Image 1: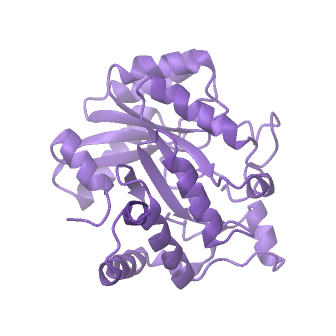
Image 2 (image 1 turned 90 degrees about the vertical axis):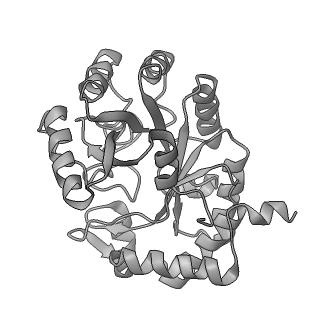
Image 3 (image 1 turned 120 degrees about the horizontal axis):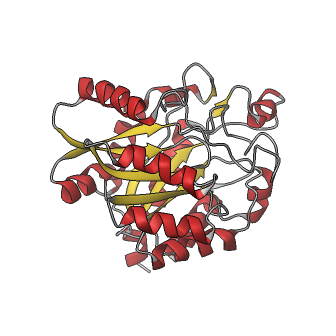
Length: 305
């Protein structure tokens, strides 16, 4: 058994076999980019709105699914279905009829067994929540919320654009509609320590979320973070520090929460640092070895209190 709840295990239980995600760029923008809240997005956000591995928005969603399916079929032959992952930018930030059209373009594809919609917690008005409930009644649906940190000072520094209470209200609004929430967390944010990130995990433990994505902070070219890095006012984490922090978080993460990701993927064409993250297999193998050697399992620190 794995020492934590893996996404692969969760999908196999839910769907009866391996399920792959197809990252989609549906052509949306973000209030933190179009001037509503700010310009340029959060300091770490790439030019493609964190959708660097999504298909091109110039292609129809049906074509993006076909392309993504073709690519994954080269890696796995036992896939029983695909989840359309609306990844790039803010995927509830458009008129409801536009959203409905995009979602159903994916949902109507026979290969799609579920939708995962990445968005901001401050972009979930009542009419959008109603649409998400409608979609949830027709397929498996997850809403992924970028949270990153519970430290309000860090949130201001990274230009997140909303308070913690906005996030928690969004989680409860989705929970009341029985829509699972996946929260995104970043390790290595400017001025944050492992203790700060642990506080973020403990904060999430108090909320009815079903999944978490843990990311390493990547310094990508043409971002505000890149300017801090180039001016030597931000230093990325070492691999040792990242993995030590990750061990701490896993031990304190509520054991029912599914871990959708343990480290992000940086686009090698734009990644400035940390370059050690490009060898993802080594990172994960080292992490799993650390868990085994230290006998760490998900949530064990909570049981010992």
